Length: 437
Image (cartoon, rainbow, N blue to C red; front, top):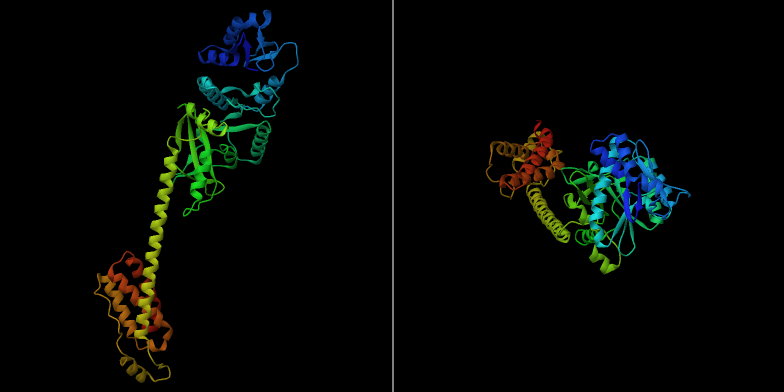
């Protein structure tokens, strides 16, 4: 183990060794410094005792680490937990250093919060043997425990996920609430306000908490009816000494829609047990929320409702425009439909009959607003006056639709460009049979 008690004082020998190395001492010099400082307490006095079982322990100084080991008794649960803990720690030097720095930061924050009545300790000091050991155990005033882990290496393969789920099962079987603080390097947010995650990352989401539930309840209410799960991921920014909260609504198995920009939070806010929630419900809950988040929920949902209102209004206006267009097409079709079929007449008879057709009752479109619109109207008139028109009664609906669309394009409404393109497409298709073009 890395710590022991010396007359009720906690001696963390590995932390001291690491600090000496940071000051520039060689590993051998650091070892000698610790030997000089603690040898008499460890060997001659036998004053070090285990923080887990209160049995005597001795300091053991290796070239690359410093630990305490039981003196004349079998290893207790704490020492066995420490063996399991070190077996699962990062082996790569760079990752091990990063993990050590994160733990040191968290330790300082927990020390600053101990006057609040909540106690944090190294996970391996738990009095029962654990298969998976957290970095820290935070014990709230009501006795509930949170397992706190800082994650610097993240994978998405099946083996990693299986080990992670076994860890979660171990924590829950001992009544721990798991909280994973993922290194900020892994936070991936797109410019379109979506967060990307892998399956392992999602398994590390924050436990069920009041704000996830409040968001999900508000988003599921009419008229929004957005019932996808709301989740939160907590990241740790060690250099800035703060946490980052990312709360999102699932939009796929690897994407989520952020409910607000990832929020930077002071660690002493995040890791402090919410006293108000504890008093109200008797349950310990860390402060997994940002300042004035209830206002954020209200504003976000109100903004969505306004967007839905605008969309509904646009749909109603579009339906009205389409209804008016269809009615205009019907009027034009009825006004210009030939009353008799001349398919059996001779060519001269067809030409005479076509020239005697009554003019459409509807008004002609307004004067074209541009040269291209004028060309389109000219094509329409030539198609309507074609002597072949009587041979193709099935084209009458298309002619009426093209005329109505040209009228709308001439009016210059918001969809004028679309109307122009649609009319051009119709006339281009029917000009060959009617005009041979």
